Amino acid sequence: MTDPAQVDSGKHSFVVVSNRLPVDRVAEPDGTAHWKHSPGGLVTALEPVMKRNDGAWVGWAGLADLELEPFESDGIHIVPVALTQADVEEYYEGFSNDTLWPLYHDVIAPPTYHREWWESYVSVNRRFADAAAAISEVGAVVWVQDYQLQLVPKMLREVRPDLTIGFFNHIPFPPYGIYSQLPWRTQIIEGLLGADVIGFQRLADANNFTRAVRRLKGYNTKGTQVDVPLVDESPGVRVHAPLKGGKPYRSVVAKQFPISIDAQSYADLAQTPSVQARARQIREELGDPKCIVLGVDRLDYTKGIGHRLKAFGELLNDGRISVEDVTLVQVASPSRERVTAYMSLRDEIELMVGRINGDHATMAHVPISYHHTSYGREEMVALYLAADVMLVTALRDGMNLVAKEYAASRIDDDGVLILSEFAGASDELKRALLINPHDIDGLKAAIVRAVTMPKTERRARMRSLRKRVFEYDVVTWSSAFLDELTAKADG
Ligand code: G6P
Image 1 (cartoon, helix red, strand yellow):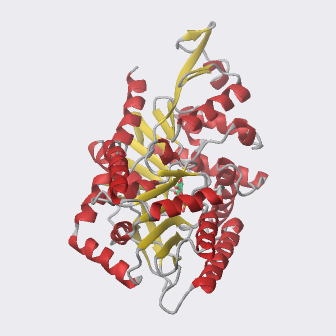
Image 2 (image 1 turned 60 degrees about the vertical axis):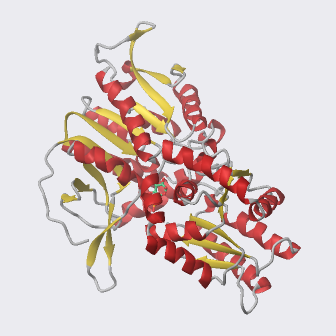
Image 3 (image 1 turned 120 degrees about the vertical axis):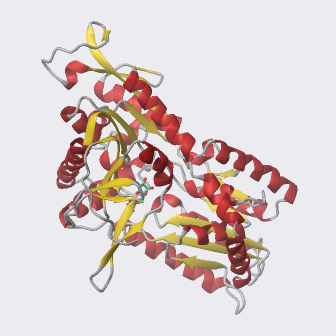
């Protein structure tokens, strides 16, 4: 992508705010830099809404110390928010990814609590809120995304009470027993309650949130509705609002909206002759094993990559699968590489891969084909088509879109999905082989079952997965959320 022309950002009736922009600024070793599309599902989902509403996207370009003017990319107004190196270390790597991320994922890794990180989180959230406030027209709809920006809804409401504000949490919301560890637990709840609609992946996440609201704020909650007394928000201010127990209140909706993918675009790619040829080539390059098992993850401790390798290694040791017949392809995309827990994880995983390969490789076959990289969409779909079994062993995951991408790509109705019950996707993809990744024997049994599953059963299961993924795609997801939000605006 070439550098786009700068534009006057003006005011917008629909604004998305997320930590990362839909485009990344990439620095080359020779000192030059360019823009690269980061084609996440969110971009695909929101693109039509953005174009219809002259939308704007507020976010960080992914590099420190970069002041960039607003510009236009594919019909979307991009409004970059600058982060200094200190912000990246304290707000992004620190509070977002070494405090909130482990805390919200069942403390699989221990969260670190630093008051300086919290101060940075507050000030960066304010910068995002101010940027969104500055470009929103009167009565605009603003949709804030994910755990990095949980204070933005309240900050935005304080400066712009005319806005309709939505928030969607892409990761789990933890049970109160875990959430209550957070020294700033009340401030985060107050931050989120600035929104009109707060979306979660699963019903359990929404319930965890409303319980935290009751415990920390004592507010009434009924079903998906939370009553926020306005006197708490604007002390001393007389307001015209519904009354409950004589007090004015604002009602907030907290509800599950499971995110999805642009299923058709995966099926379209899977139809492409070049992608199909690449899938055949991948199988050949791997020595045409009877069965290819695939794992695709960001290299993150929440994904249970170690559990999966342990199960696979034991199956080889036990002689229940052989290196000639079964190959595991593991794609591990580099992620958050300056955070200590991620550095140790990489060492741990690569040690395991090396050991298993060292113990079981023959001159002709290597049990694990390991790739520490991220691939583009076409290569991913070719891999999905080549893989007989897809292995998703997350210990905790908001949704896990890889599971949905695999199903959407299997236009031949073949392939077996093994899916952790701790991934949000398991609420919907009920005909996957559901596993508890902590139960290594159960995981081993599921792998053997998948490898030996008769074709009729594979097809029946895959059809059911595909039906769900196509019926509830990312456009259905964004419409469901925005309908709820605009109903609040009109009501
Ligand atoms: C998860 C989060 C996203 C985040 C992504 C990649 O999916 O929910 O908010 O953007 O991981 O992580 P990164 O830290 O590279 O943005």
